[in-house]
Length: 291
Image 1 (tube, rainbow, N blue to C red):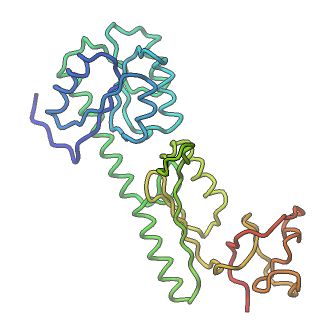
Image 2 (image 1 turned 180 degrees about the vertical axis):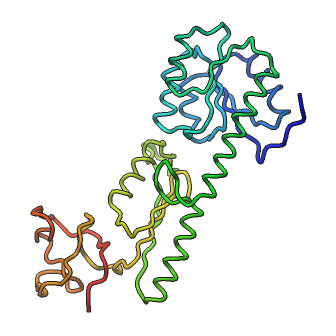
């Protein structure tokens, strides 16, 4: 083989196969090439370990012992256990049929390989697809917005924060920042939190975008951590509606039954833009009330 350019970092290969001999063969072939191999034996283990392992390549047996391999591959894509640009390879010990290849490709696999393929060909294919994955990761990290979720990346959020802080300082306007994480609570006495599954993290991102205002900057701080920068946001203690409704251009007369610091009215007053009533006021994300 021709000399290879070193990877920018050690790629993680997640192998799902119950055969010890295959895992040992892949270890002996991939580790000298700069890969870090993580092995699991079943499809259930693959689904459980993939979000935390964050693999750059997935090599899975086309005939897993516990679950249907095509269904597992589809679940990895649909549940966002791996990123959309992570290569998934199906491995089989027998020559694949056309139907098997089409089913695997339709489920999100990038290739369906027979174990009779020689080691050099397999290494070259992995090298090509892995470099595409790493270059895509680098491009997404450098970008300001994640094209999949529409949220700011860490770099984009930092840039937007500098802009909003400078604008708030110049106008003497308030600026709120909220950081939150999505976690699962244990049912036992262990106080440690459990990592949230990717589908729960994606749902949280959707809720933040749906509830946020157009002026808010919403981004990700990590795999399950988010931050919201809300310009011109009322200080703590003001009441209002957390429904994204627009405030009136001119405030009404003060309501003695309402909040003494803003003009949202009592807790049972209808929303200004609809006929629904609120049982109690929630945190106010609107602009500061006029003095």
